[in-house]
Amino acid sequence: MRHLKRTAKLGRTGEHRNAMLANLVCSLIKKRRITTSLAKAKAARPLAEKMVTLGKSGTLHDRRLAAARLHQEDAVRILFNEIAPTQKERHGGYTRIVKLRQRRGDAAELAILEWVDVPVAAPELEKQSAPAAETAPPPQSTPATEAKTEGPAVSAPAETPTEA
Image (cartoon, rainbow, N blue to C red; front, side, top):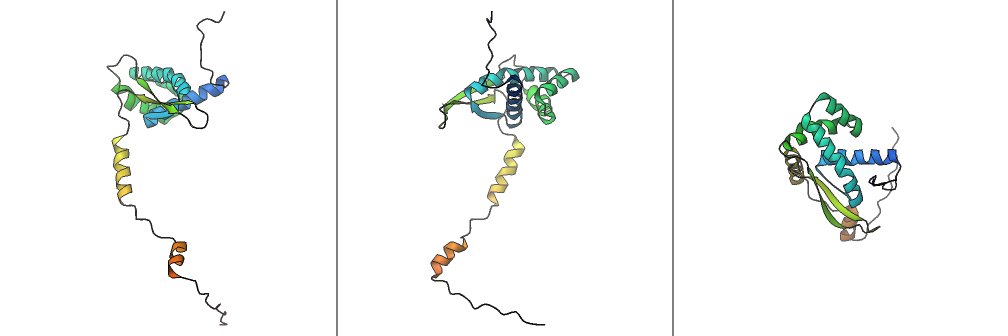
């Protein structure tokens, strides 16, 4: 009998589903918050929680287990160095799911999957993006709009090539 063997299939094969969930968790680790469908968020949540549990112990074996599941070394590094230390006092429940709205194209329920105690934006990213916005030059008018304001265009005579 198939009692208590419930898994969200998400309309994918097992390999595709595992790869997609690993990519969702890597995006969650790198960006601290992701917007996805509610079904995918509910499926990715247990994997994210297990990865934080591995990161809290911090052993080499746990790092290798996380790398084998996530397939992205930079995400494993961020998980073990930044996210797991902030969750040391918490015993589970590292993520939260916030329901948003229905997607316009297919009416799928959207949700935000985010960490509970981890700040959403890294301070370095905010500092880098703020000066870039301030130094952006104001938009200039295009030649097409300038031609409309000047009046009718007058064609210039063609130049003849000179012999040297």
